[in-house]
Length: 117
Length: 118
Image 1 (cartoon, one colour):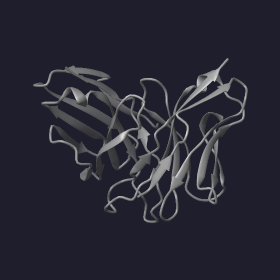
Image 2: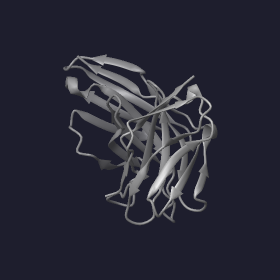
Image 3: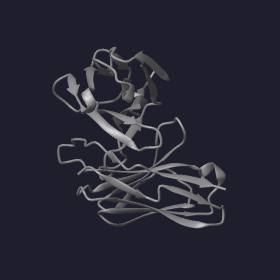
Image 4: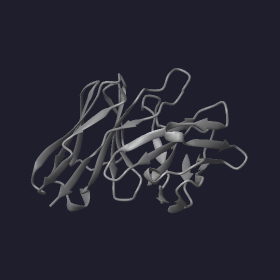
C-alpha cells in the first residue's frame, strides 16, 4: 500500500478562521512533508518532519503551524491566512535515508485545495 | 545547491508516437534523480528514480528514463504515447539537507506539460 490520504479535499476559509489540514500514511515512513503548490508550478517545500520531529522549516509564516502527533499523522494548522495562501497543499511521506545515505522516493497525497476569501 | 531544469514548458506528441520530456541537472556529488507525474487536481505520482546502476531506468506505466552523466541529463521517454499520458511532469533531484535528519528533500524542476493528441 503506497497511499497517503489527506482531508479535507477542499477547504474555503475566511481570513479570520482557524482550520486544520490532516494527512495520514500507514507505510511505516518516518519522514513526512508539507508542500504548497500554485497552479502550473512545482511544489514548494514548507516543512519536513523526521521521526516526528520538525527538522526543516522553509521560512514559512507563523500563520502555518505544523504538528506531527505520531508517526502516521501530520497536521497543518491554519490561522489568519491571506488570499495569496490559496493553493493546493500536498502532504508526502518517505522512508528516511538509511545509513548509506540512500534516497527514497516520496509518496504524495491527493492534496487539499484551499481557498482563502 | 542542487537543481534541475526542464527546458520545455509543453511537449506535444501524437498518440502512438514516441515521447521525450527533457531534464538536465546540476549537482555536487552523486545525483539522485526522480520523475513524477501530476494529473489535474491530483497529487504527484512517483514514476521512477535513478540512484545508481544501469543508466536506463524503467518505471511505471511504460515510462523509462536515461541517465547521461556526460550531458548531465535525465530525460523521460516512452516508446508509444497514449492520450491518457497527458499530464504535468516534474523532474526532481535530492537536495542536500542542512542536517542529516531531514528526510529526503527534493528540488523540483518547473514542470513540463505533455499533450498527447489522438
